[in-house]
Structure formats: C-alpha cells, structure tokens
Image (tube, rainbow, N blue to C red):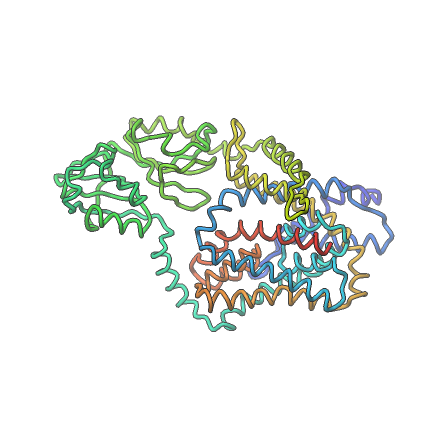
Length: 537
C-alpha cells in the first residue's frame, strides 16, 4: 500500500479525484472547479516533504497537459476571436489590454519595491488574475521556480479579491442596478443584437411589380424575407423571381435596426400576421455533413435548387442573420423554410445527425499540436532579434487558425463543445497537478522567508487594475455597469467573478459581455504572461 504513494498513475488520479470533488463544492454558487486540484496537490506535496517521501512527476505528463490545455483553449477561442472585436467595439478591447498590462506593471513594480525575487512577479501576476492559462504560458518560457510559487500564493488572494470587488462595486460606485438594466434594454434594441421577425405591408409604389431580385432586399438590409401573402390571401413562395405588389403582406427576419430599413424600402409595419403555409414547413437542421463545412450559403443556393430559404442560423447559442457569404461550421443549427416535399432532402444535404456531434476524432488534435510544436521552433526576425513563439505560442496560434478555418480537405478541425471541454479539463489537470505537488514542498519555506508581503502584493496586483479599469469604463467610456462587470471578469477569464455579477441582475447582460470578450482576454493573458516570463524569468 505504501508503494502506491510513489506510483505516478495512482498519485495522479488520487489528487485528480479529490480535487475535482472539492471543486464541485459551491458556497453561494461560487466554487473552485478544476483549480481545486492545485491546492490538493500542494497539500499532498507538503505531506510528502514533511515525511521525507521522494516523489516527482515525469515532465512528459506536465508537457502533455500543457499542449493539450493550450490547444483546446485556441479551439474554443478561434471561431469568435476575430469577430469578437465587432461585438463591443475596439474601445472595450483597449480597456482589457490596459487592465492586463497594468496588472503586469504593478506586479513588476511591487516585486521590485519589496525586494522579492524577480521571477516571483510572473507567478504573482498569473495568480492574482487567477489564470491557469497564463501560468502555462509563463512556465514554458521561464525556468524560475518562483513562477509557480507566486501563482500558488496569489491565486486564492486573486479569487477572493475579484469576488469581493464585484460584490462591493455597486455600492462603491453608487450604481442603481434597475437603471442599468433599463439602459441596457434600450441599448440592445439600438445596437440590434437579437434576431426577430416582423410583418410589413407593401405600400411603397416603387417596389410594386418588381421581383425580389430586382428589389435586392437581402443585399441592402441583410434581412431574409420568409413569407409573402397577397391581398386575396394567397401564399407565395419567396424566391428571387417572386413579385411584390402593393397590398401584399410580407414576413421578414433580421436584426431590429435592419428591419427599420425594410420599412423604408417596402412599407410600414403591420400587426396582421401571415398564417403558416399548408404545404410548407420550417424546421431546424444540424450541420454534421463534413462536405458542407466551410461552404457558403451562396454555394448551396437552396432557393434555386429546392425553393427553400434559410431564415435563421444558430451558432453556440447565438442567432445569426443568414447572408450569402456565410460559411457553415460543424455543429451549426439552421432553420429552413421549404415545401414539405423538398424537406426530406435537407437531412441528407446537411447531415442532421445529432449522434455525430458526440463523435470525436483525436487525429485533428494530434496533427494540430504537431504543427503548433513545429511552428514554435521557427525563429522570426523582429527588431533585430530572432523571436520564437515557443511551445505554447506555436500551439495557440495553430489552434486558433485551424479552428477559425474549420476544415482542410477531409479534416474537420473544430471540436464539439463537450469534447473540447473534456480534453481541456484533462489538459489542465495534467498540467496543474505536477505543479501543485512541487509547490507543496517549497511554499512553506518561501512563506517563512517573505511572510505576509506576498499576500499584500497579490492583493494590490488584483485590486489596482480592477479599480482603475472600472473608473475608466464607467466615467470615461460611459459603459453600462452590468456590461462593464462582464467585460472585466471576461477579460480576466474569472468565472467566480462572473457568478457574482450574475446574482446582481435578472438579465443576462454580464454573461453576454463576458462571452464576447472572453476569447480575446484568453489569448491576451497568454501573450502578456509569456512576455513577462521572458523579461523576468
């Protein structure tokens, strides 16, 4: 039995099981999740050190966990990374960049002021913003043992500080949550985030007698005409050759502000509704056919081939207005309105096999990681220096690009959400457990050497950027406070912080802001951590 305490596989799964179980414990909805394993590993490391048990995990386990964790991060961030800039504007992303850079500067400044080891700055930075991905990136470029020690000390301080700040921010800044909710509802209507449908009466004589192709409604307004009803009640299929006449009623799907343009082109909105076509049906289909992935809506041309219209697209829970150059991704859901006799063909065209979404091939993951590792070894000339992306940088860049591309030949790069989450969790556990075990044997000596200074430094590394960013966001950029909380917690990738913000409002405002900036924050944390690791490591 004692021999098992030095067997890697037993210790690994023992720490994993205990850590995950503790991470599921929530107090007022807040828990540590997978991050709890590092504290369990630290305690085990302290016990081993106390009783003189010599044990260390193989570096292969740590490296395997690192590349798997970073690769799945890129897979998660890739599809929305480049588009996320449009959601809240560049000002928001400058705000997040400033927040993280400020945290790094505060780390370096306080470490220098308190005369701590310079490698401690990297660990304290990643721990104070509670980022395991930042630690992963910094560990790859820094050889200092203080990186991991700083993370272990600053991590719990960072969690508590973020939670307390979000909780107290409403009173500190004199915010009325109800007012913010009302403002957000007005803003979301103006900025047009949601997809809706409305009915219009054709009253504009300029479109009378013209075909839909001649009017160019979709091109001008980015909206989709779903149904047409004549004045006598006849229902018409909305194909390119369909003609509009004054007195017709049309149903149009699109964003709120775009629908305002429809009224200018066609005529005023009406409360009269078009009944469902007797021989038509609207049905959701899931993209599981690999031959459709990365092809555009224009290429499929359902209207020409099947007299059908894609009226709505849903990706990762977000509704998207169909447009000609939209490219399908594996797992997208599309709503198609078509004659019933043609609907049978769509399952064959698009796949529509929910069981396939649960199937995962590790081949694209292996190929992607190989390409990332190779890219990380290549030197790039920059300002007279030869720069390498390194292991984490190379894997991250490849995973983002491959996820964004979606498909290369027969290979589908995108992982479904459940597979990505499982592999990401496994990678994080394999990365954190060896680090935590190593920390346990060193952290007491470090604490005895530096005392409570490390906790004080960690507190200010977290607090100062939070306060300054909130002040700028609220008073300079005039951001909605609920959106601001989502942006801040998303920029730091702080799930506990978001959980607290969610309890403040009945709306989904913080969650939407968090989701929009999360990919950018995720990648930026890794970049800043690597740069800080190279400078201070």
